[in-house]
Length: 97
Image (cartoon, rainbow, N blue to C red; front, side, top):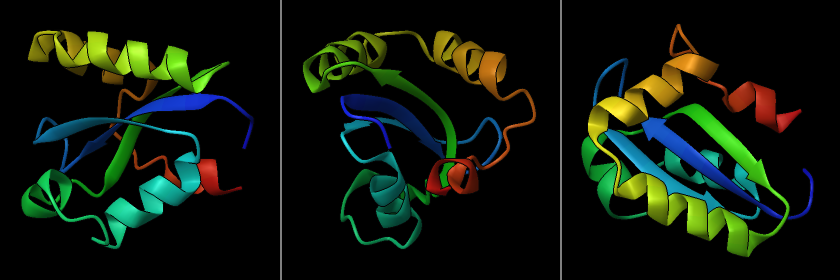
């Protein structure tokens, strides 16, 4: 993975519960969510699918973007997912290679 940071969205299913997070290691963090190693929201609501991500040159820029996106309406978040991933495929394998 590249240096910097990632904003990412995990989902329980298409149009299901979504979670927005930020990390410097996307493959590791997505794996932790999939394996339910992180207690909290994603474990409680079964958000195991990585459906969207965006790379930023610095972790600070990624954190700023995450904070902005968390303020968005749900429809805007869903639109963002579908622009990148219209079929709501799990992108986990893509980021692990």
